[in-house]
Image: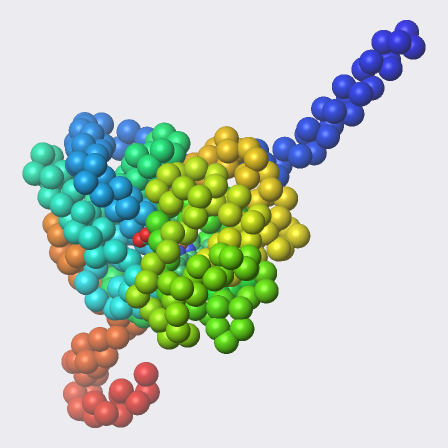
Amino acid sequence: MASSSSSVLPLLLFSSLLLLSLPLFEAQQPPIVRGLSWTFYRSSCPNVEKIVRDHLKDVFRRDITQAAGLLRIHFHDCFVRGCDGSVLLDGSEQEAPPNLSLRKEAFRIINDLRAKVHQACGRVVSCADIVAIAARDSVELSGGPKYRVPLGRKDGQHIVTLDETLRNLPPFFGNTSTVLGFFTAKNLDLTDLVALSGGHTIGVGHCSAIVDRLYPIQDPIMERNYADRLKTLCPFPNSTEGSFPLDLRSPNRFDNKYYVDLMNRQSLFRSDQDLYTDTRTKPIVEKYAVDEKAFLDQFVASMVKMGQISVLTGGEGEIRANCSVRNNPVRMPEDGDHDELIRTLVSESSDGDEIEEDGMSAAF
Ligand code: HEM
């Protein structure tokens, strides 16, 4: 009796420790929001995913670095007004500083994909869905996990202002608390933040986003030799052009080396490096650095979650014929088109009195 209880005790202890550690690292599959489904195009465009994948295989065979550009576009799309393809629209959102470094080629690839898909099926697949599929394939074709994305997003009809764009995209110079604020505003938690930041396992950053940690004084957290290399690349406080891999160890491979970089204090942005300084996120970084599967599982779950932020579905939005232009623009006062609002208000003024335009403008 005594011997059986003594052998059970360590087992119990071990299982409860395991259970305690689960909430932190277990990748729970997020629920699918109403209006999206795993089989959305089953009858209207059954080959959509194959068409996208075949084209991307061609593109990446020539230049695998384009995968990073496509993954980043999905993130920037989802964080500003939800995953509605608004980032693709020519106009103010693309002019916001964090979007200036989105790859122009990535926008071209999305439009090429849209053309191929619409040629095969007609205008039934949204640009927002094409972005989500392309991001997924970029991950897998760079050596990352294979996963499914729920589909059925519609494209937005609003141009998003510069100000709204800036208010929704986290800054690279922010610490974990700051960046986490942007994530929680989208219902993404600490674990999502650490896992999704792992998207920086592929792609590059430019000097414009690096110099603040090199000048006027070097960020003491940054490893010395690494900082010296960066200074050679970005020799002046106002250097902008040079680019450096986000993941030093395997720049084009979707793996867990980004977390190894963080532990070696070799990452470009404060928003990344602080994940290893902040005591809330440090254990998650350490876990992902040694357990690649834990990272990849959580990355998939967090991507599916991010990919459903404020999506338009059913009768909402539209399916654009050209991803860069709205078919049926819906104009809002915040679109910045004050003239149109003034015209509407003038024509609606019941007593027929003319409202002076300057006076109205001043009121906005
Ligand atoms: C956590 C907050 C984040 C911040 C502050 C941030 C910031 C940045 C910055 C400053 C760059 C480099 C821009 C340049 O200099 O060219 C970049 C690149 C990139 N980001 Fe993020 N990012 C964040 C999260 C994410 C997420 C969630 C993903 C995807 C899941 C992602 C994917 C990428 C990729 C793939 C690149 C490389 C793009 C390329 O090579 O063209 N980022 N990010």
